[in-house]
Length: 354
Image (cartoon, rainbow, N blue to C red; front, side, top):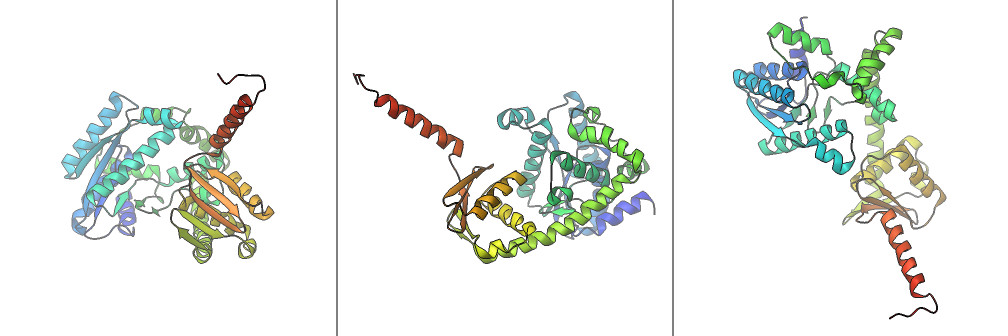
């Protein structure tokens, strides 16, 4: 099967590729996203699908990035695809939230995609990630430190996000562009190995390929298996949360006494992660979960923990209560220290209050 037919079949069997829907196609101008947009332009009319292309300009590469945006716009004009551009300020977000440039760009890009999806009433956002990207993502998560959740890499369908080409390779995408005579962009920052993903692509993966030439394929397969395991374990954890938890105004209340104690560790950790996430928590680490489990096991009453996302979890009498937190524990401790300091100063003998 030639590469055009191969990618076409992948798109056609994608569950989110539905007749009569509106979709958003993310297109940076690289070979992978241009191949996706071109294939969508070819197949969408026959399915009565309205396809809208979104290009996010990160303002990190000056004139080169502007040229990429222009290329995508001209391609959409030729292909009769609706084109929309969103400009984001990555340096500003990086400074405000202390993120890396990679993290900041990714966060703003997905925010822009979701906002546009809502504006046009699209059923899905199609992304052109492929098997090479998946291998890089699994390794990136391992380098950062991850469990099964990170091992699953990117999902073919994750909410509104759809990745129909996760079983295709980067070469497939480039070959498709060549067969269709498509000119695509080359991002000069892709060679900068100070970015972790680039280091993995340029240094780590080639090294691993000297030992195992099929490492990318096998990492992608491992991700598929991890995703299946995670889906099952998550479903079991959700059942427990539904049976023993309840929403009380802004708080989520969960029983964690005898029934929780009997759960396997794999389910316990996922139950806690679900509850914290329900309350707005994010970037929850294994150390966070481990500490919370120790609090529950010891039965320490009225013990609280704070999580990223301005979320607080309180343990009391065999129950966890998770909800929004306006003041962090560190801020509260600082206020108590300042209050005690003021009290000491007020009580010093021999000093006049005038």
